[in-house]
Length: 308
Ligand SMILES: NC(=O)c1ccc[n+]([C@@H]2O[C@H](COP(=O)([O-])OP(=O)(O)OC[C@H]3O[C@@H](n4cnc5c(N)ncnc54)[C@H](OP(=O)(O)O)[C@@H]3O)[C@@H](O)[C@H]2O)c1
Image (cartoon, rainbow, N blue to C red):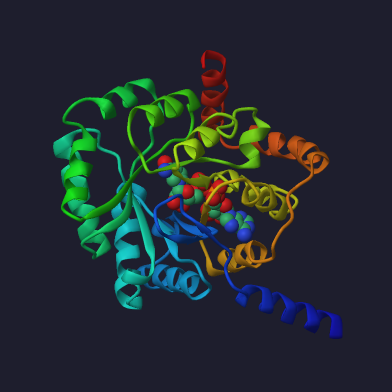
């Protein structure tokens, strides 16, 4: 009995321990190692529950929030806006959002809507969302594209920094980073990605670092695949010890948030090569047993690698 009580109190201490912070590239912000992602709670939680979750994250030291125009048909930005206002925390946190329209006019409309939903007149980091094909790269790099809209809003003070995010095609990401002066990049850094042998870590990450960009990681939990893993811990240990500035992680409840933060604050040691090798079969098996939509996603990875 005593042991149980001691463990509970030790866990509570870890939850309340200081949040590890890392500089977000050269952007002048010390980001919480855990950035709270913008999906799952956006559609699965009521307004009140979402606000409670987001403010609990803030209370536990999360100072960086990630959302997108497209998430939850606007619910993610809207609910984050409610939390920023109700908690009075807008000036104390860093907010990323993303614009997915590739055209100048369409992007301007999305940016306006995002600012309204977020109940703010500026976002700290605006990502060009989901660069995943060569065709998209060309649309983004064309004259009068989304980038022109972002530049105008940045000049007017409504956007502080510009980044790009992508999930699947690393050579396209590598190329656009050399073509435009993005200040931040968001890409998958999970062990599930390593398991299907397609990773941004060897080429994109060092290139972004050489260019002084902020590096944000996602897919730490394989977009939820971790739920059927033996433990979430090694997946966090793997990604959090990579040279990234912050990990954008999705949660759908306060229980998940707190479980993750206990580990994030627990100063987890890196996985050894042997531990990584021992986990890959599980990660591969889970990935291949995933539902059809996600399996298509894996196929996309494998095909991109062959042609890449
Ligand atoms: N830029 C982009 O293009 C892009 C794309 C995708 C995502 N993102 C960002 O990245 C964030 C994370 O998304 P992701 O796709 O990379 O997902 P992820 O963080 O790899 O996985 C998140 C999911 O893992 C599960 N999970 C979290 N904590 C857990 C715990 N303690 N125990 C068991 N399961 C747990 C939850 O699944 P269930 O909800 O199923 O329980 C959660 O939704 C998003 O919220 C979003 O902000 C960006």
